[in-house]
Image 1 (cartoon, rainbow, N blue to C red):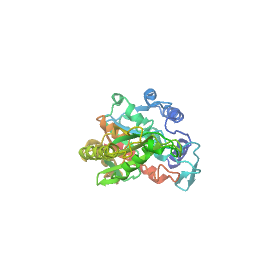
Image 2 (spheres, helix red, strand yellow; image 1 turned 45 degrees about the horizontal axis):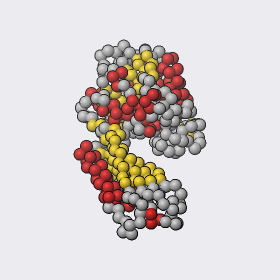
Image 3 (cartoon, rainbow, N blue to C red; image 1 turned 120 degrees about the vertical axis):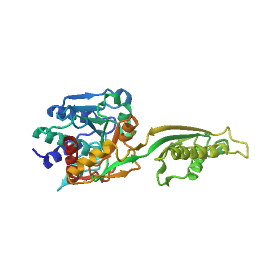
Image 4 (cartoon, rainbow, N blue to C red; image 1 turned 135 degrees about the horizontal axis):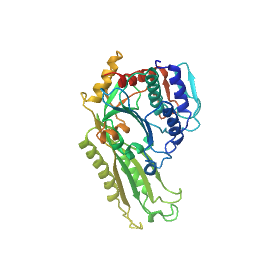
Length: 380
């Protein structure tokens, strides 16, 4: 039986309307276990990573052994979690376009990828077409720091390369993505009554504002960006704020630039805090600075001639299509898998305006990628 557009549409709606916000992917994982049991998967396992991620389930690894032993085994990755607002999702369909019927995200990021894998495998199994060994890796916590991928015991994965279904374009394959550093900056000042004795205080928010105002943020160069996107601090308008924290990141395709820009930010905060002065000598102490910097994920830079790229391009050619290499500024599970030594390219499903209540997707795009997945699994 060929790929069925309506069957793909039905399972996509069912997946989207099964809530799975980050840390609460368990209901979706249970549904996927049912579906892949019906499809007679050779194994379905929860990897037990919930104890490390805090989710209500672990990553799900599904295997089909396949009867085509000529083509190399391959894996596909999608994440099960969605961003908020993602609970109580109801899907609206207008012709071939799916969107949220309410004030939630649709969840096509990344449930469109999951639906595509299900329909591709259903079509293959029903037709009895030989296919290569394949693993599906459904991760938790991608949207909040790639947590599931980071907690995955990658020694469980038998295939040496694969694909993450997690972008928009259905005519490109992502071969390059940046590395990222996460920065948590905390400035501690001195609390005092803002009306009675403000001279005794040290305003942490004022110092933070001065430091942030002096930073280069946004697009730093053609392959690097920086941003601070979360801020918290203070207690009341009549209290000199004693503490403020900002969370940010630096991304770059170039490791030397990543280190250099991160150091630039560190020095900017240090200059402001170390340069604080109290000419009146009335403050009850000095401000202090804490900088916590960690690697969020490594860069992925795939050679255009490597097997994972050549295979998807060959599969596309079989469908009289092309897949052009593309660079992205985003991070995904693919960064983590590449860091494990598992070459992972990113292909798209057609998802649009993700991470917003205006998210939508066209069934025609999902069908294009379903055909591509089927071709990867069944052609040389």
